[in-house]
Image 1: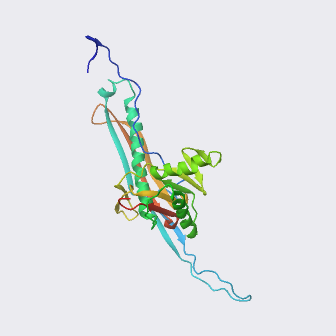
Image 2: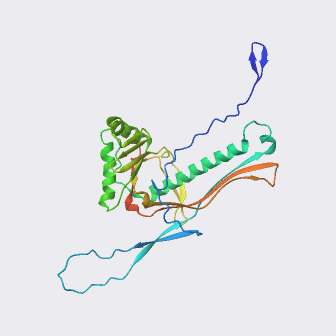
Image 3: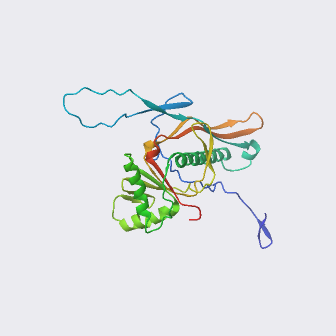
Length: 287
């Protein structure tokens, strides 16, 4: 489109800078919201032993024999059956006709969108395989803290641990107003982007917007999970496993056309290995 100053055509230029695309925040963070400790390789599946504790121990009188119990355990499968790929074609004539690094920019974009899809799948696994809270009431300013601590209490009552909370943007706004602004001088408030309260790292999750998040479970069944009704996930990072047995990030010359391909691939496994330590609160439909 011509740019006219009066009746004079003036020069046009394209910026070398790229306006970045927007992606969801990274909330699946190793050591914070998930664990990689069960990684063994090379393997397409990892099986984790979970010991049966047997009978509870009660007191008896001194001078007695032991009562033996047979060793018993269960296996928790962590299967690498979720594959994520993104490939963008960059024709050589296109790259030669623009002033920005076209291939590198598309590679960076492909990486970000692939990691975003992987995160949606991980959250879907958390919601599907974690323990659903029976509380589906709406979260308000009056009850937000109570709802959060009730989920933590449920984990502690299960004899588990809790160290993080993923909360929706609506809930985070309420908590920020109540816990953040009300406690400006408290060093536990690191910034407006991170709250630490009740032994929990409270993280705003703007990925609770997908009504059809998908992942393959440990049996190979494709699950479709509605994340849009999730208010909070409170859990322990070692209760959720996210592992990768293959990751690739490359620019490769094409054999079919003059140009290159920007390609990213992850092969991942998702498993809630301790459902009693991942508690999911949703609101009811229409709330």
